[in-house]
Image (cartoon, rainbow, N blue to C red; front, side, top):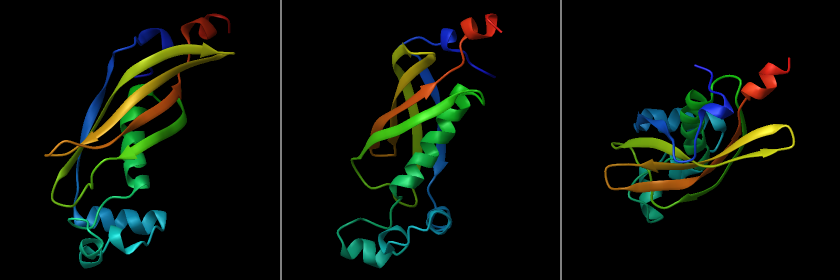
Amino acid sequence: MQRSWEDVAEGDEIGSIEFPLTVHRLIVHVAANRDFGPVHHNEALARAGGAPDMYANNVFHQGMWERVVRLFIGLDGVIKKIGPMRMKRFAVPGDTAIVSGSVTAKWREGTEHLLELSMRSTDSIGETVVGSVTVALPSNANAAHR
């Protein structure tokens, strides 16, 4: 479904997706984005550094956020900016990341119709990552002028 800017109101929830965090998923992601920092794929080294286990990196979280946002804005929506984001706790294998968000601002800037989304990742304990995403949506007003 393609959502238009006029379809959205501040306070709207954008939906959520659950992402099981497995060792396999973390290692495949590390290889895909070439972040070979050992804390993201080596449990012993992560623990030696004070983490409870190997853990998901920022790009992993950005990818999960992008999937949830993309389902909300549709293919004609544009993700303008991801962030800032703040990691509050480690997201580790054996848990499930639940990514959700809500619309916190809606405005026009030039010819663009923009939204700010407040995003959060949670697990079985609570919030792991919080931040924002800025998106542009198509406008019904623009479609009427074509």
